[in-house]
Length: 510
Image (cartoon, rainbow, N blue to C red; front, side):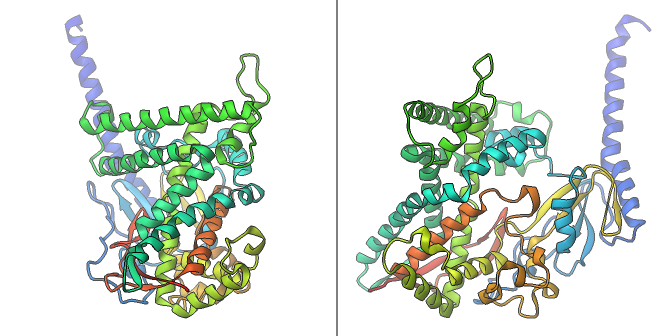
């Protein structure tokens, strides 16, 4: 072969190799996986190249007020699909299992067989590369450090920050009422609770630097919108490296967030070296291990790198603006639909605290408020499904799954399963939790709003503290009902939210 032909030969070989890889990815591998699953009797749709079983969009007509049978409305594709079935997301088979015990086994008892779904690394890095993205020793190390920050004893010290943020919310609402001669005002509580969550995590994460923290949240909000828009595009290798307007802006946002965080962290470390307490905010607790042992080069041997601390800060901010605002919005909606429970909760709160700010000593007596929050999380869980991918061939529930199969665990279906919760599964009945979570259903592992196993949400106590503080202070000062403009339309957009907002009528209590 002449030297002039070598480049052409290399090009032809590369094109043939890429074509073979594409053929394997789009046809041969999916067909192998499909045959393996079909041979074991799993029902579902056959594989078709270049198509997906895309979720059916939410219906346009609203649900009746007071109706909580939301599964057919939110996930019509899964409704009636059977307890185990196969669907397709492009060339990747997804097996849906509606079984609480199998879900627990996937999330807790099959370590090494399942992994979290891989994401586009560049997009993930532009948002956060914190604890949920880590595996192995790095995950263990970060989980241990963050576990201290979210420990119950540490969260107690953050209650003043929780109440200060809630007080600002109540002040805004009181001012709105003062300007309304009719004695009531209408508020869409969804954006209000987003502001509350942003203010709370800013105070508890950064302490005295919480105003700078608000800037980070504003930037992250824009980043999330841009990443969502990019995620809807057809994936083209190398596209994120192109200098498009959107790509440049996403990198500018990431650089500005990291610049703000670097400044906050530098000031915090200086303050800690000067003797500032390390007990009052999450950032201090994350940095505390860095203030101890170092290696020969001066690097911390016990703590996280500054880059890791920044990523965990991003993660805390992102998580704080998802679950808490949604939980509080649905709580006010359901208490408006069921005023008898609103009154029971108010009597409990006033009996424990009067009109004084709630304190931790009284939280253990919040039985009714706790039952209400649990029932809201059961009927309207923030995340409606968990996903894992088989890393190795593994057996689950009598079925052998080859590597490369996505296991979907639809939390919403488990929480609305009459075989688990009884014939009144779609009714708002907080008293089902009167004897705790373990006695609320015939399967103690069926209540999974924060996940299960080692990967259970590390911030669940933080979320519940924040929610209890907000609910208590709102009940102390206001009574509320649904506004005529409210439309009951649960909508799954990563988080289960009210599609058209949560319009509530507020009246001040005398």
